[in-house]
Amino acid sequence: MPEFAIGDTDFLLDGRPFRILSGALHYFRVHPDLWADRIDKARRMGLNTIETYVPWNAHAPEPGVFDLTGGLDLDRFLRLVAEAGMYAIVRPGPYICAEWDNGGLPAWLFRDPAVGVRRFEPRYLAAVREYLTRVYEVVVPHQIDRGGPVLLVQVENEYGAFGDDKRYLKALAEHTRASGVTVPLTTVDQPTPEMLEAGSLDGLHRTASFGSGARERLAILRAHQPTGPLMCSEFWNGWFDNWGAHHHTTPAADSAAELDALLAAGASVNLYMFHGGTNFGCTNGANDKGVYQPIVTSYDYDAPLDEAGDPTPKYHAFRDVIARYHKVPDTVPPPARPAPTPHGVLRDPVRLLDAPDLWGTWEFHEELPAFDDLTPMPQLALLRCAVEGDTPGVLTFGEVRDRATVFFDGDPVGTLSREHHDRAIALPRASGELLVLVEDQGRVDYGPRIGEAKGIVGGAELQGEPLTGWDVLPLDLTEVPSARPSPETAVVGPIAGPVLLRAGIDVDAPADLFLDTGEWGKGLAWFNGFPLGRYWRRGPQRTLYVPRPVVRAGGNELVVLELGMMLDPAARFAPRPLLGHTEA
Image (cartoon, rainbow, N blue to C red; front, side, top):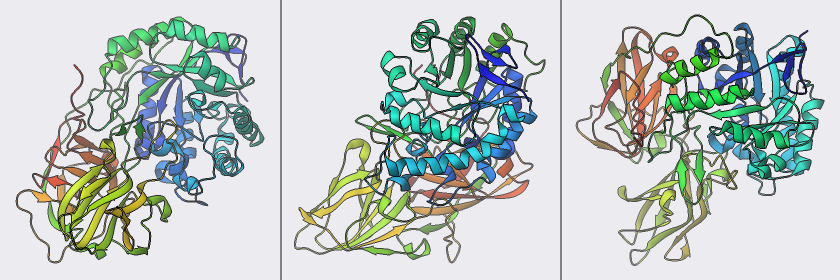
């Protein structure tokens, strides 16, 4: 069997120097029927390796569950990498960041506030070991010394930016080895002396993450990794977007020049990202460094391969750079073609406040629960409480995570936003039915707020007195809402949410589509039952990517849950992705 090892100055494949030319491709952000296409396009750009994270919370949405089917079939993904003649790097975390909900850590793990987060704590480590065991049952047979593609396995992820618990890192490394992983183990940190020192252990090969200044940053890495190959295992060739900001881009020429400097220094590289893909459904993460910033649905990342899997100018610029150092394949993927632009009329409204019993089952709670107190944890819920008093009062919540729209006797009162640190609103009347629609817009994926609870945290008060006796209706967003109107009706002009709408979409043949949400407000969409993700008029993202495998020739069904105000109840499609304005 082949042997892969770390030499004095190089990676060694069967004893010969080997440079890793890798690209990040997250299987969980790409429709599984498109995995082979994206892998082949990486090969044709000149890469020899595919890197992926493993998202714990996607595989284990509830305790005792571990899903390896469909878009989570890691075994199939690694087999496709091998069939393409490429190698693989696996980064199972348990924390992955990745701008992914909760950084990949399952929210259910932190229902017990005593459970540690990314540290040597018995309950946390017991869950981590169980998770890693399941991952390594898949990965171990795919190692290169067993005839598979896996060259490296990473321990934790940029840990030096979070903590310095060496016992924790040692426990992860020991369990990885005990599970049968024999290939070299790595860590990655931003190349500062403090992070490189805190984030690794002797015996684990240190690598760095950066997007510029290769020579200087490699010199810092070398000071902390005296021997062995230098590697930038996250070469940031783009960036992610937040709702309400601009679409981030990096000039292809500038990124190519940085890649050239990295390869000229003799280093190995993993492009982050080669192909970003999409935060389908409600899988996006968020940042909170004083201001909460949820991440958009698109994870295009301004990568060499765009969200729809088409080559960009950066793809060709990177290929030209790689060709200066290594042989590249003779053919390149064709350029993108304009996508079909079908249209449909959204109709058959089902208004949540008019018929909430069609949407699920109410639960009674004397005290207002956070989402994390519910099983399963929702990402959207309707709260109901009877209010009685002599004069109108002020409703105050402990903390809103992340958006709460308040209704009184069915009339909208206002919206409280975590981004603005809102938590209080005046009610219009003394007595009536209070309804609050609460949305989790994505759990924080980086920093000290990882693992925090969602929903309304800290209860509710009216004029300083506790407000008790709540009915809670969790809304399941993992499946298409099944509520249907009776009788079926058309929609004319703008319509206010929360409301469910449907449209028939006819296409001639399966093809990638770009759903244009520019005239809609805020909500979620499904295409033939497949969760496309969130949309929001505030941008920058305007189109939702519809992968070709979910599109049928002939009739298709689009379902939209509008939470805000839809200006035009029409379903339109754009010929190309519209990801928003840039700084330029």
